Every structure is written in structure tokens, then in C-alpha cells.
Amino acid sequence: MTEKDINIEEEENLEEVNTENTENTESAEAEKTEEAAQEEEAEELDPLEKAQAELAEMKNQLLYKAAEFENYRKRTLKERAELILNGGEKVITAILPVLDDMERAIANGSKTEDPQVLREGMELIYQKFVKTLEAQGVSKIETKDADFDTDLHEAVAMVPGMGDDKKGKVIDCLQEGYKLNDKVIRHAKVAVGQ
Image: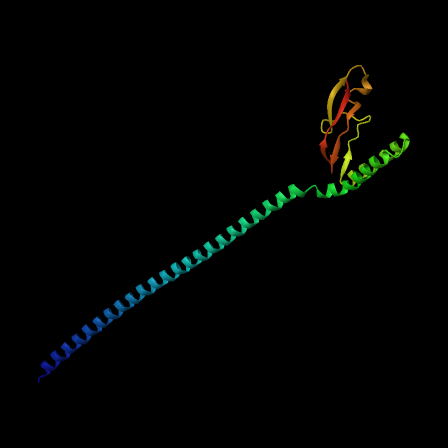
């Protein structure tokens, strides 16, 4: 073999090596590209799977909260209905002793002929009843020498010729008015000076 043949052979070997290196580099790059694509797909799936898992968890929480709210709504409706039916229990319980006193007065009324004794008994029962109502928060609306107030009074008559000092004042109370804890439950029916 001559030098020329050796050089040609070396060049061919170098070309083969270069070709192999290029092919290896291209293969390595292709493999890296494929791996990167697979990793991207895996990364895309992971967030997607995470989002789906979070969505499922949120749906469960929403269903739980909706069921909890429905139970709360039913419970409050039941409590409200019960309150409406039995709300007056406290007041009725407080008034029952007054009713007992009235029954005793009626039963004992036939045993006495003295009207003064009956009158005193009725006054005592009335005072006890007023105290019971006051204990429940009921108070009478004051009308004597009061200025007419549409929030408290209902004018059923206008009385002319009472003078300037009685103008706009309550002259007479025809029916008492009452408040329950500062809320008017019945306006006082009054005659007002004109």
C-alpha cells in the first residue's frame, strides 16, 4: 500500500467517523427531542390530572355545602314554625295565674252580697294582670295632656273651640294604646283639640 492509498483510506475512515458522529449527534438530538416531547406531554398531563382532581374535590365540597345549607334551611323553617305555634307560651304561662284568680272570684262571688268586696277583688285581679303584662314588656301609652303624635295616637275626633293652649293636644282618650318593648302594638284612640 502506498502512502496515497493510506491517505485515501484514512480520509474514508475519517469521513465514516464524521458521518457516524453526525448520525449519532442527530440521533441523540432526535432522542432528546422525543424525550422532551414526552416530558412535555407528561407535564401537560400532570397539571391536567391535578386540575381534574381539584375539580372533583371542589364538586364534592360544593355538594356537601349545598346539602348542609339545605339541612340548615329545613331546620330553621321547622324552628320558625314551632316558634309561631308555641311563641306565646311564655305569655300564656304568665297570664294563667290571673285567670285562676278570676275563676276564684267568680266562684266566691255568689257567696257574698257585698258589692264592695267584689269590686276590691276585681281591682286586685286587674292590678295583678297589669303587673303581669308589664313583666312581659307591655306598657300603656300615656295620653293625658300629651301632644298628638301619629306614631302613638290615632285621632278619631277633632274637638273645635278648645283654645290655643289645647290645639294639637290630646283632649280625651277613647281607647288605651299599648307598646310591647317600645313597639306600638295598638295605637291609642284619642280626641284632639283643634
